[in-house]
Image (cartoon, rainbow, N blue to C red; front, side, top):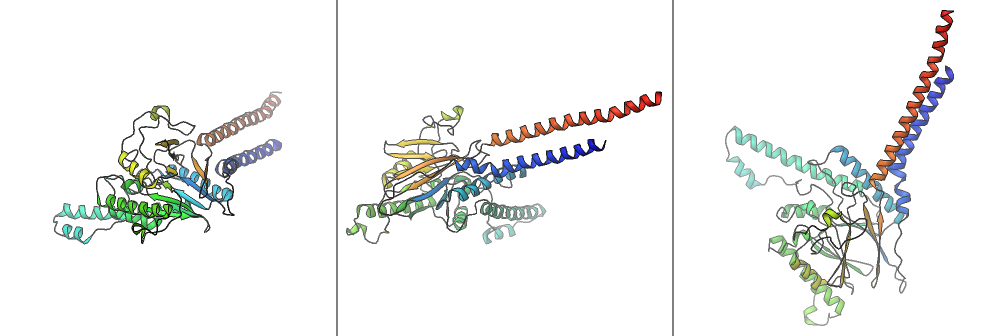
Length: 415
């Protein structure tokens, strides 16, 4: 009997050790061999100028308080945190770009407090119902303020990075709302937290990155849209002066100077395309979605806005997100665009990101896939099944070992 109990204890310890090992494998270790398969594309060094190494990802969609279940938030955010931190440690990029839709509910959460005009108007209201409405509205504003601050805190924890790695975040429709939901307050709040603007050229190692708030490219002359379009036109003029070396001409006086190379255009929305029908690859949209027609200003920016960007900047590469699927398109047979899939398991079974090596004259890209969610779930399910089978078989053996001395004791009594 003592040997039976001793073997049971050893078995229990072995099963616990096995489960802990599987947990560590699925939640930590699995990211290392998968991401180790990725490597930076090679570019020859010219005049001892080292190329720039940039990592691009999109559509993290950190869940908020309205739609986000705590278990879903925990699972998806842990996956993104481990994937991002492991990628930084193994690949050591110089700069990371997140192409919008950082949050899932940024368009709903609010950091706004009631203005004096609103307070004055509410002061004129009377009656118990009006007072209750005012109290509920104040509570809602306070709750939304807390939601926004919590979202930002979680983002900074998940995407923490060393001081020698720069993180640049672009604006997406889920961060400030679609065009009809976009407000000056939401835009300024996002720009303040992430130190971004709606139109900007960032130059690193002689490579120009054009950062655009594509939500504002609606073309309906809204105040925000007008301001962004005006700034883009100004940047286009300055960049063309820099590329064509026309600073001595009158029209190029007092313009900002940039590196004399065509820019890499980064934005959340893709440029206009009819659908994803031409997209291929294991991360392309499913067949039942691939042939659905895109809606301008909702799925992609408009034809007119796309033509303006291509005409003004003549980018050597466009990188976008929004669709959650991978796609490669060649606009006007000149301008390549790559749509980057979502970085989160919530939107894809096989998330990925892009590694880019850039020089003044060359660009090389490679795609890096993360562990698939179904692989992790399969490891958990198979491990639990094996542990359950071993446990059941041991219980049967234990019962037999108890039944044997009992049967012998009964025989002894009958004698």
